[in-house]
Amino acid sequence: MIYTVTLNPALDYYCTMETFKLGATNRCVTESLIGGGKGINVSLMLAQLGVPTTALGFAAGFTGEELIRQLRDQAVNADFIRCARGQTRINVKISAGVETEINGRGPQVSASEREALLDRIRRIQPGDTLVLSGNVPPTLPGSIYQQILAQAADPAIRVVVDAEGELLRDTLPFHPFLIKPNLAELRQLVANPQAPISDQIQELRDQGAGHILVSMGAEGSVLFAAGGGVYRQLPLAGPTVSTVGAGDSMVAGFLAALENPACTLEDSLRWAAACGTATALSRGIARRERVEALRDQIQIEF
Image 1: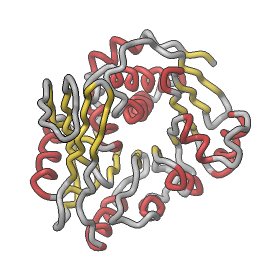
Image 2: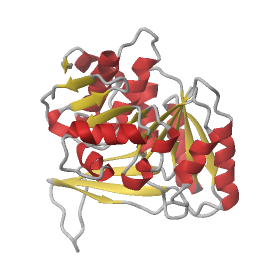
Image 3: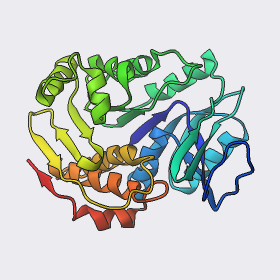
Image 4: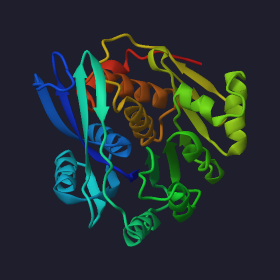
């Protein structure tokens, strides 16, 4: 089973407008309300690919119930801790020539609710995969990822981390199987961001990272394998609709490929790139048909 953790999930309200003016009444041309959050995006893409997944995290209020309903309707096992105070946030994403976001705060998480999540983590079995994605909300301690990984310390549990800065760096002593920074995030992690990228990768390996998948936007992506191999995905042109969830889709594609024991790292990167590209060309997480249509177009150099 692949478990994802989203500490502050959301309902993302997407609205498209011809123009947006402050201080005026603005009307939408199109709109949608989609459950989101980095770990949730990973689970949604896994479900599209037919891979069983359980989404963990916190939910509250009527917005939390709607989030859970949406996930279950899309074949994601939503096993959230219900918070007594506050509500699952709504993030407003306005597209009017440029993209503007207004993100909510999320619920208040009590100490007992935090412990309930840690208890869920303790039930994860050897052979399972645990994905930690996104930032930590203000009502949780900055050490929460470390607390979670301390409950999943069995080396047979495959750990994946997609976070920024110190939040990611502090997980490296737990030897994550895969980390997925983008190029800017990679440079934030190392002592000398101007050093050759090979030196930056080695620095992260010395601290405990396994595979390192670096997304590079329009330039494609590069997988620096734990064994030393380097696999470069050449970019695939297309009209980007939204970058929201593209990196999360890459994580899902990489892990989905690994569910097949015959899969190679080249296969994993190809699926990762197909999922990320398909989502960038879609509104919301891409559907499986679009991923499969792109997969054979992905070129890998190594």
